[in-house]
Length: 122
Image (cartoon, rainbow, N blue to C red; front, side):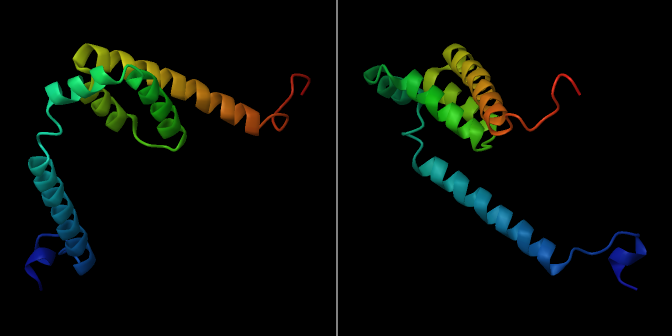
């Protein structure tokens, strides 16, 4: 009997080990990339770049709506908003982007399903 089977839990298969190793490699590479390009992620540098482009909030909202329609997690967009606009403005633009994205998703779904649901007289 194997040691893992004696305790009632199966040993990880080769596939599980490969997935875990791949996840560890991706996390390690992501951390290394963040460390390498940490100056680009500096909040003051990002704020200065945003200050040069006054249309940045509008561009963010358009990107947020597109990402919402393409099923990009909103958590990622909220983190990006916080990094780009700071804490208070980031919350504002992320919340507004979420609402506008939800409205856009509703309108797209309504447009695609027009006339295919139950009617009022059914």
